[in-house]
Amino acid sequence: MSTNALSFAPIRTDAAALARYGELFKACFPMTDKFTPRYLAWLYVDNPDGQAVGYDAWDGDKLAAHYVCIPARAWIEGLEVPVLLSLNTATHPDYQGKGLFTKLAAMSFEAGAAQGFDGVYGVANANSTPGFVRKLGFQLVRPLEARVGVGGLRHAPKAPPASLSFERSWSPAALRWRCANPHNPVFMKKGGGKLRFHAAASGHKLPAYAELEADGIALPEFEQMRGQAQAAPMLSPLRLFIGLAPDAGSSYWNYASIPMSLRPSPLNLIYRSFAPRVGGLDPARIAFSFLDFDAY
Image (cartoon, rainbow, N blue to C red; front, side, top):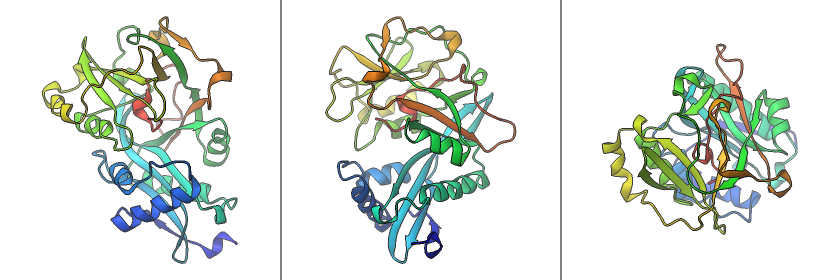
């Protein structure tokens, strides 16, 4: 079937549309159970940084493909700007191999640029990275570190966000929302001038770990999160760090790198700028953690 027979439309976020998306994800990923209407409403609608941006492909009243980015805020080369996080994509088995993902992604990025977003970032595995780079103009910024260790992340004093090439900007409301993931909650505790986050993937005892400086967040307001983001007992003294730290301040002496041969899918940070002022990100000046994408 030619894609000329299909129609394309922006995503919808009403209850009926979210149910249709859930059915598509189930058809495409039968071993995954997270794409419930509740989860999709949390992801697409409840995000305090804005509602999801994306496009659908329709064959009459049959949903053929779906692609979505969600809004976020980030520090990009000295400016705090709105960005998109590339997330969900699904093409029904009957319509695969027709380039629908590339078409929907390009339409979504055009819409995002028109809405004032500064760019789009994502995390891609080894199989999908070449397509993002060759077909959609993304920069392969850097492979993510994957390390196992104990204790906090021992980095030099944190660089100001404005000095970095990329760092997510988390408001208390956005952190509260992030921790309230109905499929896999993120747990938080405060101590030592830091906010410490961890989450465990279903079926795994090793929790992913991240830290944020507490001095950049209005703690009295942040304390209201505690009903949704209570600190949970660590399931293991070991912690998994997936992310990046600026080269000038990184020290992983208490976190050992996981060999590539033992990683189920090495992950890459990718980025595409919509703004002429930013040609690309500097891989040496990136702060990134599991909080900033959807692995957990």
